[in-house]
Image (cartoon, rainbow, N blue to C red; front, side, top):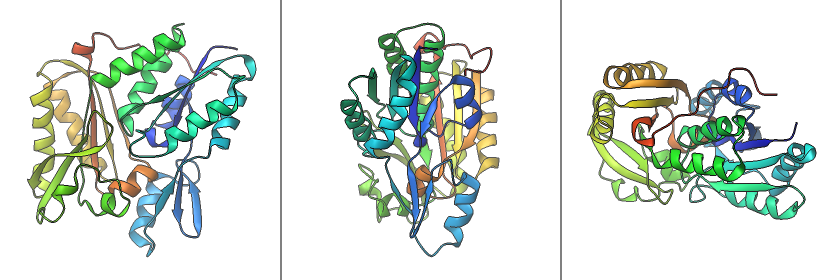
Amino acid sequence: MAGIKVVVDSTSDIPQDIRESHGIVMVPLKVHFDPEVYLDHVEITPAQFYRKIKDSQVHPRTSQPSPGEFVEVYRRLGQDGSKILSIHLSKNMSGTYQSAVLAKSMIPEVDVEVMDSRLASMGYGVMAIAAARAAAEGKGVSECIDVAERVRQHVHLYFAVDTLDYLRRNGRIGRAQHLLGSLLQFKPILTVDNDGFVSSYDKVRGRGRVLPRLEEIFREHIPEGSSVVAVVAHAGAREDAEKLVSGFRASYNIRETVVTDLGPVIGTHTGPGTLACFVVDVSRLGFWPPAPSKEVN
């Protein structure tokens, strides 16, 4: 049935069950352990990836989908006359957005809107979820884009990495470069700035200070007692992720919460042990679309 179809790439890290229940279509990036190549979240799971990265002598690299891969998806989804809203990883982190834009230009017969999230992982995953819920409520494309953009403006994103080596090796360190060479025993806490670049925010001495400091950072930006949607994604650190969610429950009125894995592509750039927190300040946003009552086909 014609409608609005939301498309993301695999760096959104939206869990499969949530994608399926919201009718969100995912286009995978690729992870290369030369000469082996895997489709992100399709041919290699996060658990498999983090085991492999520890054992492999080859440092993985990633590559974006080709325009042709997007064309194939857009054409299939548009066969019934549906309009497509395609939301992607920050263009300042990847060429994925540009591939999607080029694909749009190759199939003028399909109505496609491409959106640069200027975020990463579940930071824009929540944008896509909100847009898909808006579409399910019957809102038009421009209204769905507006919902996604308003959510983007109220997402607070902070992540802690064990080391900057992975970001440095893959050229994704952006405005956090000045931290190199100065960390020693410190653990960096990073964010994504308004232009979609990885940027330094703080650093703490030792892993034990990471969780308390992350909780403090969110309380500095979102008043205690606020209504929020809280997502914690982790790279093989589930126990710490669950502790963070417990901390958020003590501070906020939780509308929805998700604990999930950072996928292989994001994990290639951040490394094992990463903790990433994405909190939507629903009190200031003023709304949060309800979850679908049944699976979307």
